[in-house]
Length: 558
Image 1 (spheres, rainbow, N blue to C red):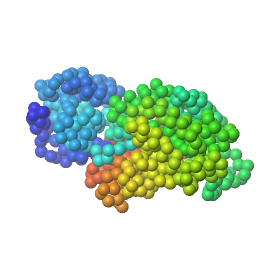
Image 2 (cartoon, one colour):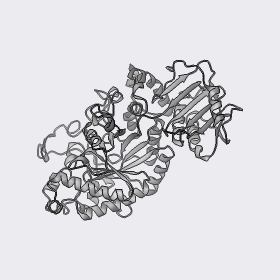
Image 3 (tube, rainbow, N blue to C red):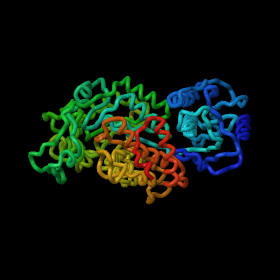
Image 4 (spheres, rainbow, N blue to C red):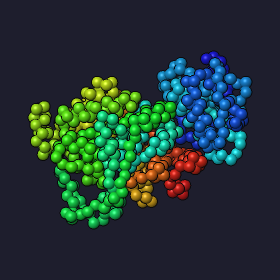
């Protein structure tokens, strides 16, 4: 270790302004050293590692170089770092690893050192090195500026979500999406696999979930109500939506839509994410947002004799769709489903939804009322809590923890649950005050399916989520004291796919708001500076051009 420190000391020099380096998210400490010549990267340079535990990060760098610059580097092994010739040294130094995701990066004409406090920290250093590379693939050799960087994340949970129920995206694109998260130092991918509009994961014990539940006969045209359905008006009442005129017909395209992931494909994606140090949290919705499940197994609903169908519409209407019956039969079914799901995902967390469960179905169900009476439940909110607690007990018995949307607070929070606060901050605040972990994902800031501008160029959800509002959001609510604030685990962006039908639209909605989110969650709070972020973003856009990523050119206008 003394030899490593000695080599580092050779690389250290006096500090000069780092304004010319445009990295997102902004590192904790960065120094550009103009007095030292740049490192020249070409196909003759080697990546030096101690053993195969570091090969994953070396491979990621090589894959990026091959894809974007059309060359890769030889990987060699050495028990200690070398400076005999210019090379890239990847090193683990786990001594005093109080922040396991931390790394340091040093570069000058003699070499590049990336030292991680863990394999994961080293991988984050690779992402920073990538942003030191030029955004043009025309000039060789590639110049890497002489810098000194010390870096670590602010929050432990840095998440991004993707809804594949409203619109299905294939495995190749899911991998691409995961790469986008990795490049921004995100570490959790929330995979929304089931909803009213499609069941997307193979469950071998219940094949009808994908035979029937993975397919719908059409999708709503435009907004409901609104563009494409202008004749429809609605009024939200306590337990229903009143639609006028009564004979209104909601326009759908009549095109069959669907798809699902086999268990082998799920394993493939999980392995792919793990190599990028991203944990996948699967979401299996319950007790609401279950129309795809009920279409396949109607006996689990509150109206078992009804012919349910996979939903073709979205919006306010779906907040009042049917829910699962809180019966022993339903619980056994869900336990069997989650047993298969948990075997596929090594993550210690399972997201069980828990949002927007309309109580009207339990109110009018004799079976539900009998269940409530038998269990001493005063109202339907307590029935929802009973449902979530039953499922949490089972998930905990398998050594895992549930995450749920903030509605799981209704009727009493399950003992070990993590709360994802989407209806503003209230749910996260309440959870933190009850000493539960909370993830902040307020809709008005972090739902990236919403428009990026006040007047949007494409069809999106209504209220815009402006880039400045995303960047300036503070995940820790001011009303929490220091002890309570420690329960704010982090934050997450969500991308719901009602109006997102193809990968280019995903990219357009994601970028550059993902950049803003990543800086909120990674960089020190005191480093946040929106004008400086916008300046750095212009370099990031050139990098996206190199990578073939779609984003709005409107950001280049000012």
